[in-house]
Image 1 (cartoon, one colour):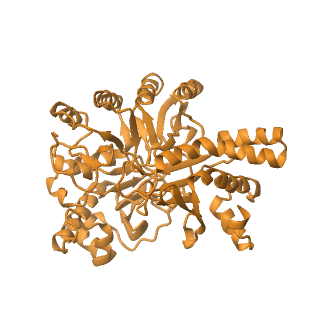
Image 2 (spheres, one colour):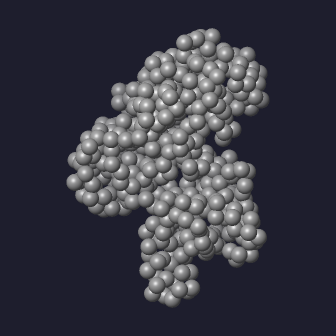
Length: 510
């Protein structure tokens, strides 16, 4: 194998990460942007490698599985030329720069973060010393748009926790003021830790440089972790140093980059706004958020989407941290044609009723207890049929079929219900808490939980076999759809209200 550097625990492009089903290759796409040239090159490489499926990750990167060979030296050269890999291989895995996928086109954003993404990517690529940072180091940049990263979303499953989180806020605290400041927080332990610091927009790159240098200072002083190859992360830094010491150390390098003692309230974003058809800030243009079942594209679908972008949507394809994609800059009178062509590829530009996330599972992962990918596809196929059948039995076959078909198309819900299948407790597929969690505990068996964990509330419905999953979840979704107080009431709020009313959910749903 012609890998360039030794593998580390986080998959990359210059080394192959071994898995049960072959090698895993991850291509960083800072800010989730993929140009036509980049997309076509990846499609060409997939054909050469015999790979038929590409996955968008929960950091808006791209991933290929089950590879049996390394890229050739010529492909490594092309990866660098196209901006899909860093000139310095040792820092490439650090290019985890997440941004709102609607940056620059969102009518609600305060500042366009795309220049920061480019500048931060350039900074990382040019500094070899950063290789001492942990491979899962990440930066999040949120411009205050309707589509948000970080924790502004009202949907917990949309939350993303970057180690350095930069969020634009209005200078006077109001959304009307577009001359914003940048709020600083740190993501660790699936929580966001507020520093009380603001950064002037012209100091963003300098602030990140100071924060990474302080991070390196900590790593140089801290005891190494017992497990070889593992590095201390933000969780360890905050536990050992605390917020104040970390910020003070960074401020010593760039005193003008941090304004402390600021209390900021981040305004909520719009849940699931990365899906469906939306107008852009540019008059006469729209974007279409495309649902990707389990975050995956076949080679034929990738080629088809790139053809749509070339014909109808000038600009890059936008990948999202929710494993979907956005086709932007579409003339409003061409949106229907784009939707038709997406449908011809087996893709939808409508808001789905289910947002299902699943890790690799068996046989690809040695830690897996269950075949989550196979089980998730089964749920996607069976759940609409289950709801149609159950409502048909209750309401008369014809009426039940009509309602079931409606729910089959959009589950009768305004925002998707999130189901997370994880084959082990590490929950690799989704950082944010799901409304329905299925934790693999044995072959073909899951522990089922309701509730997204807000206020530490989750309801354990016990273990369930794969064969019983679709009928049980069909009853959950049917009851929720019928008995929620309003379209805005989430599945978690409904389940919690039911429990507080004295309903024993296990018996009720049996």
